[in-house]
Image (cartoon, rainbow, N blue to C red; front, side, top):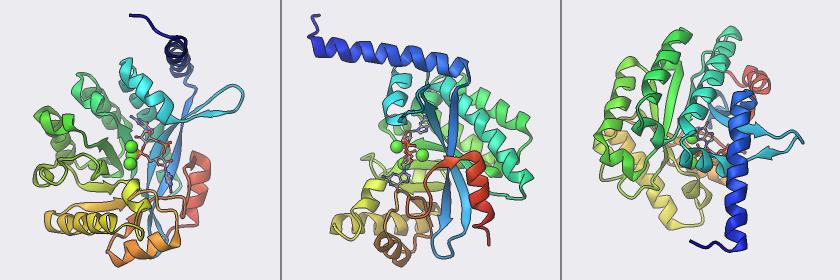
Length: 268
Ligand code: C2E
Ligand code: CA
Ligand code: CA
Ligand code: CA
């Protein structure tokens, strides 16, 4: 195969990034930011999501949207996610020490749950942390893979039995979401931010969110809306009965210490 200059450049950049990412993992140079989940009626904090952060030597941040796909393609994602889990468990202990019993969620790639190793190691780490399972939540994006592989559902069901929470991330974007809603091994559905962004502007988005609310009610899922940025979106979500939200309107992802401080001022 012949590559033109620009393709070669993209490949070189990816290799370089992968190399740097490996080094960053080894040096434990990645960190997490915590974004609050908020009760939008009262403004109270009800939980956090841990998001990976990669700061370069020059202080700039490389966004997850750039390096997560590279880590997935190179088979490095499970190691990365287990490192993030370690940081998440530390933060969970800090929250408890601060007197805040708020659950924290961590992200997984569907690759994690398809490969051997991740699940057992994750459970081992959580068990060794001594934290109550109900203060931890696994987020997994609903993909085609998730529906096809009964294996993933079996793992998620085991977590639910142990008392851990399970969220389906970006819900509504996979085409088979609705067809499979009765079989989902999950406690929570996270409404994808693209629907929230179009609230009030698109009848379609309004209807989809209303349908997700009705189905969740019917089948017993909690709902979290993501990417809430405006007061209008907040009002429309309240009107639809969606109480728990995440978004810049309430708080951006913050370093752990700052998130603890924030939470102290947002408890009922
Ligand atoms: P996600 O899990 O859907 O996370 C939500 C993303 O939306 C985060 O971006 C968050 O910072 C951003 N966000 C939160 N509120 C708002 C808002 O009001 N408006 C807008 N426009 N954006 C908002 P982030 O941190 O850049 O992460 C992007 C994606 O990278 C995540 O999407 C997730 O799929 C992936 N990711 C992040 N951390 C991890 C990780 O530790 N492991 C894995 N496997 N994936 C991760
Ligand atoms: Ca997520
Ligand atoms: Ca999401
Ligand atoms: Ca996502």
